[in-house]
Amino acid sequence: MTALFTPEIPERDRGEVAPGATLVPDWLTAEQQEWVVDQFREWVQGPVPIRAAKNRGHEMSVRTVCLGWHWQPYKYTREAIDVNGARVLPFPDWMIRLGRYALKVTGHDAAAISSHTPDTALVNYYDAEAHLGMHQDKDESSRAPVVSLSIGDSCTFRFGNTESRGKPYTDLLLASGDLFVFGGPARLAYHGVTTVHEGTAPEGCGISRGRIDITMRMTGLAG
Image 1 (cartoon, helix red, strand yellow):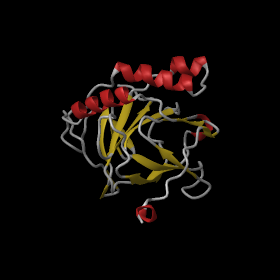
Image 2: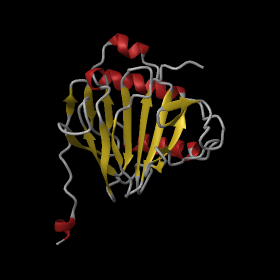
Image 3: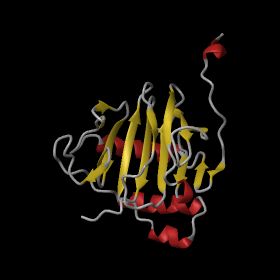
């Protein structure tokens, strides 16, 4: 009877999802995931605490802590003016190296890799009830690829088209340790998280419940 109540989980697609968008399953080892989760626990202590951003007056179900630049819907600032006014933590050098390596393994050319210098990360925490509606990542001046890492519970990730929130789209399973990179013709594709699959976090990843998603970006901003 248990199987009757198990949510339907999409197959794990491998390789190119769409032109410019690539999924690499199990990219991070369990040890690497656990190390990143330890960093996450430090980041959420501040100086800017993790919080649910407000979009058009409504609080999002996802909670976010930022590195490098502070994001709130439609803009980036150095200080968290919508939280406590404190300056966010700096963007770590190891993430720059990681971002470049992510581009290498997803087939980007040498010029794109060498010029890739992400300067902000949105670190999102999803509990079992959280979701993220279809949206474009277009608050950045740069259109360099977005690099996304998943740790913890698996989720159904909906990756769509660049014209609208509707079809065509593809539902993917993003599991703990997965890498997803989207740029080029897919850079402004609508995407979102429809479901978090509770209880799917693997042992040893550093988190027993919920999902951490790290998206590294180049803002193209100065200052």
